[in-house]
Image (cartoon, rainbow, N blue to C red; front, side):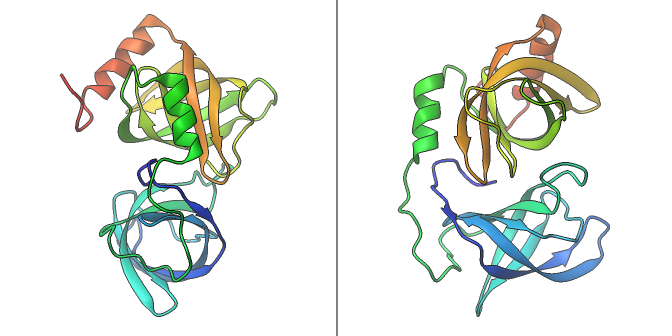
Length: 218
């Protein structure tokens, strides 16, 4: 969604979103925020099928801003009716309530300590299914950034820190598997996952994908 360097404020306020949906048809509906930051927001109760990458309008009170759809929740998963939005102009803040000062939040610091950024994370947008060892049902989410060492999954109902799990990443038409653990949790936003084990062919597939992402050093 937005840069993980920005702390978010958990708050529910009504907003109106409008634009064109995934089929190109205009929409205009009222939704609510889950959390917001200076540069983005997570919204819930979205009935429209939004298109990732599309620019839409967001109205809060008498203030309007332009936002890009960064991710949408899976219709059949726990993230249904959720969407992550990123402000086109981060200097234009539409909210009239206090927001946390810019800077790394606790989750970012914890992840930086755990991972040490041996593999820099790259922004992306991938579907992922999680299979926690503590429950039978799988969980759908959206990967917002990724490296060879782990990823951040945006989801509305994070699993507990330290949970062991299996995860499947959809890269194009191919599904690659890994074993990992939840290294950090951000309530209402998602989880940071550390990869523990992956087959050689899947790791090579992931490496090839990461190298195609903008900003990757080659």
